[in-house]
Image 1 (cartoon, rainbow, N blue to C red):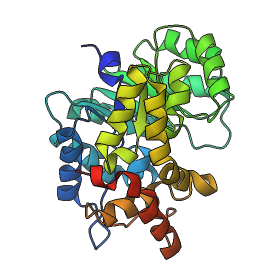
Image 2: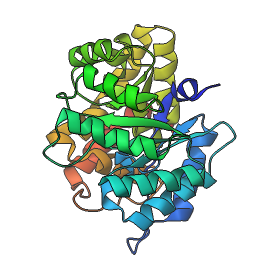
Image 3: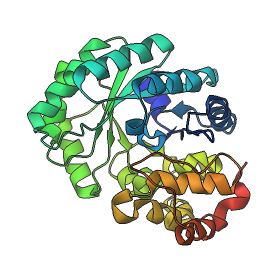
Length: 299
């Protein structure tokens, strides 16, 4: 099975659990990654946004990657998140390759001044440093068109797909049409947008919810693969409240809500690092209500 086929699935973004002293809890991180693998998740992205990528030091990012790789199964595909400046991203990408990652996901640049042509240059430079593994840019900037994406693929043939996170299915469909054939399009806004993006050509979606209930995300995947949009809508309605809570206030509590739910389920501490913040009681209570429709499905 080639890399695109292996990534045409639910791509889980593991959280990073912390100990009481604030340090990364690697034993718990390995157990949580192993739990995902044991429950049918075959693709993992350590150092994704749900893994608080920007709150970790360089050493912590590499240690987290190593921990998740250690928990992989025989069928697990590892896509390591990399980013920041080009030298840092290149160094992390090479480390990931040497640690056993199958691909890297290049985070959307955080610099406020991102020119579309500069986006091409940024991703092409990183991809060129690891020509022997796959590359998946993370794109949330609608200014980057399908033409720019096609230009990147021409320069970097190891770019096998994109994590596309622009919250507009029409823009997605237009961008995809202009980019040409052959790329794997991943719905980067997770289960909330997966049905709409699937109908426009996505064949995978990322998930932070998977940290809680892998079977719910896999049920949605099965429905989408079968073209059963009624079933997909049933799942979507089950998770809508929780995912809306995560997206509220420009996704301020995206990771905090996941960790609060995991804490309530006894999976890890609720702690997050700034600029994220632990949920106040009223929102923690809302998490309790939001997970009720599928709480019994948590393994």
